[in-house]
Length: 81
Image 1 (cartoon, helix red, strand yellow):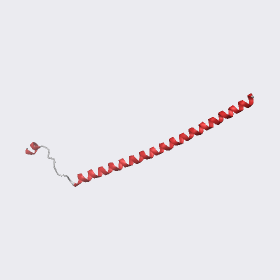
Image 2 (cartoon, helix red, strand yellow):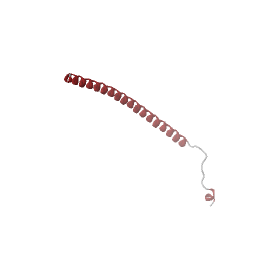
Image 3 (cartoon, rainbow, N blue to C red):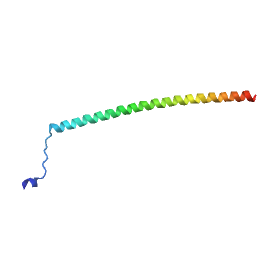
Image 4 (cartoon, rainbow, N blue to C red):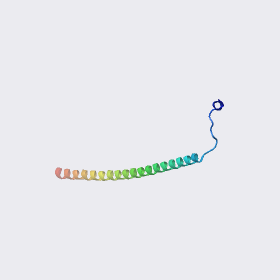
């Protein structure tokens, strides 16, 4: 009956298994965060390359459009003159 009256007993010592578990969880967390950071860095670099390629394409398209307009003006100038 006395065991029931005392309630739960929680040891105030820290076992080696607790320390190892905590350390391994911290190491695992560090590895996950590091992998996530590397992945985000790769994504950012890829995005920068995509934006640069898009800008090159836009300049190329603008140049081509200008050439087409000039060719149309030349054709209209020749036939209208």
